[in-house]
Amino acid sequence: MIKVAIIEDNATVREGLETIVNLAPECVCVGAWSTAEEGLRMLREPGPDVLLMDIQLPNMSGVECAAHVKARLPETQIIMVTVYEDPDRIFRALRAGACGYMLKRSTPEQIVAAIREVHGGGAPMTSEIARKVIAHFREPSAAAEAVEQLSGREKEVLELVAGGFSNKEIASRLGVSVDAIRWHLKHIYSKLHVHSRTQAALRFHSGNPEL
Image 1 (cartoon, rainbow, N blue to C red):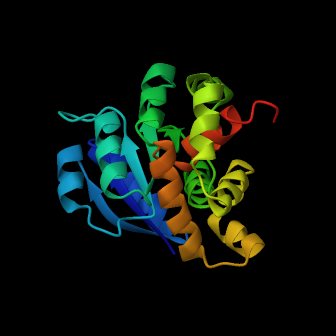
Image 2: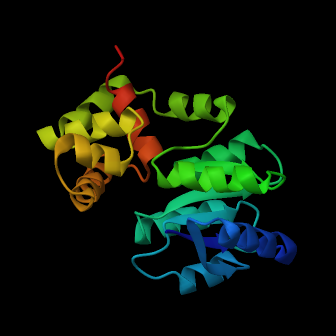
C-alpha cells in the first residue's frame, strides 16, 4: 500500500486529491493539510511514501517546505502540484528535493499514475524541466569527483538508479534486501549532496559524460 500525504491550501482541490488517492486500490491518504507549517508539524517518521504538495502555499512556500521535508524524511518522494507549468518555480522545487510535478488539471488516472511512477523510482516531468535539471548538474569534473567517493556497491546501486530501476528491481539484481538498497541510497545522497533519485541519477550521468 502506498501511503500518500497532501499539502494543499485550496479545500476543494485538497479534498478532491484525498478522494482520488483513497479510491485507488493501492493507495491510502494518511494526512491532508492546508499549510506547509501544519504539514511539517504533523509529518512524523517514517513519513508517507509520497507527498503531493502545492507549490503556491500561504506563508512558507511549497519549495521551501520540500527542502524541510527531504531533510527530515529523505525516503518521502515529493510531487509538486501546480496550476501552471512555471519552469523556474518547478525547477527550484526539484532542486529542493522534489522528484516530479503534476498539473492540478490532471485527470484522476494521471494523478494515480504519477504517484505510482514516483513510488517506483520514476520522476514525472516535461522535457523542458528535465533539460533545466540536466543543465544544472552538467559539471563533469565536480560530478566525477563526487561519484568517485562512493564505494563499489554504492556505484552499482547508483548506476541502476540512473538506469531507471526501482528499489525492488535493484535489490533483486544485486541479491540484497530492499532495506539494504534504501540504506545505500541514504549514503549515496549524503556523499553526492543530493536529495532525490532524480538528482542522484543526473549526478551519475554528469560524472560519466561518455554515457
